[in-house]
Every structure is written in C-alpha cells, then in structure tokens.
Length: 111
Image 1 (cartoon, rainbow, N blue to C red):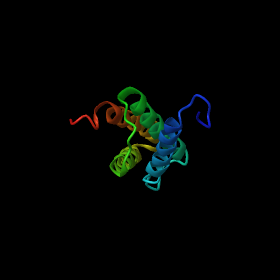
Image 2: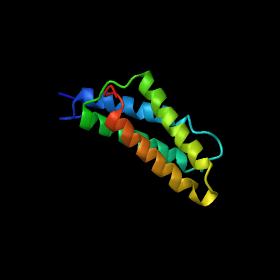
Image 3: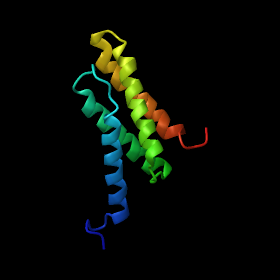
Image 4: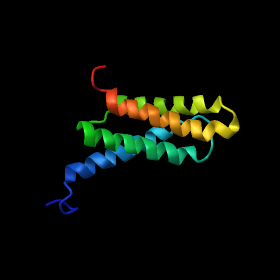
C-alpha cells in the first residue's frame, strides 16, 4: 500500500514532478512585472500540467515541456508589459491562461 493510503505512489511522483516543472517555469519571468505574477504563473502552470495529466493522460513531463512552459510564461509577461500599467496584470493572467489552455489542448498531439 502507498505511504498515502489509496493515493498511488506513482501519482505522488507525477504531482511532485509537476510542482518542480511549474517552479522552473516561473524562473522565466522577466523583470519589470508585478510581484504577484510569480504566484499567478506558478498556480496557472501547475493547474495546466495537472489538467493535462487528467484530461490527456500525460504523465511524462520532460525538459522540453519545462522549456515550453517557461517560454509561455515569459511570452505572456512580455506581452503584458507592453500594455498600460493598469492593464498589465489582467493581460498577463488572460494571455497566460489562454496559452496554457492551448498547451493542454493541442501541444503534444502532433499538431
């Protein structure tokens, strides 16, 4: 039996890897953004990874996935920084959520 009861050890391993990849992706944030973007990015990336696992059965994150997610975070932040300051936070959250939704739906499907 698992150390976590009915939670399979393999699932715990997958979730641990997901948290590590999300933390790595946050490191791609450029300077100049809101301090809250770190938490937004971490939560959004982790949610996308877990959603990809549940919906698509993707449990084999690799360095390429980590790099892609980091680039999505960076690109979202850079797009947001081009907006007026009052719109930057909303832009970052919205663009990041959209790109991560596309990552879950389409990346890794051969498209």
